[in-house]
Length: 338
View (cartoon, rainbow, N blue to C red):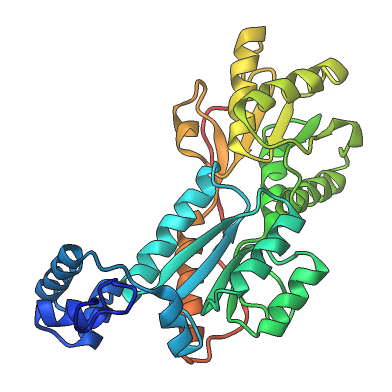
């Protein structure tokens, strides 16, 4: 026979946890959700009671009771890119004290996979979503509109009314890389890119426009590869570029790992960096400051983007009438030895 106060399933209930820890069910619920207003000693007492009973929160029941879950969906295109790991850490730091659970979806830069994730996660009745970028499939856009779900878009900016977004101008970042290389007296400038997601293409356009203005844009110096970005691929693309354009004297890579691979390959080939070829990366990943030579890169505020996007979503959830306008956090060119 089931214990008193226990569901017919035999699983312990929140009421049992509350009784054992000597608090109200509401306090027990808040303590288990990590709400910051609960005193630490009460949190510890509730957690110990839950552990001793083997209690597991029933998220489905919570969502049913409130018509909304306490979950926020975060969709990113990659879990292997340090960029998004930093962003996710910052998001967790904002949501966890509020008792919100973060559901992470990785769509591997695949538009159809992102659409499927949006459809599947909407079934869980999340209270909001953080999305990477501002463009997605027509069906995904329609699903989000029909759900009328609070959403914030990360990494890109949009002038479209009604879109809350936190990021920086990808085009301006590309133009800044071009300006730096031009300022170093380089004229045969290449753009080497992988993945080819919308942000990579926006950086390409900014780089291209700056070169056109300087009168030295050459389409044959663009190496665009749809494969995932990696150190190994960076070395391969550098070799490919040298075979067709040995006169290249400056390269902007769409991501630091490509640039790092190119530096390693240059060392194997006996090519001096930057004497023969100057290099600029993007995102300023941790290893870039320790390369030989140290890599010049464009530093992006990836952690701050996550933090600000999470705070913007919280404002929407709290009904504070958060302004639906772009939040431009900018970027920084970190000049080193390459």
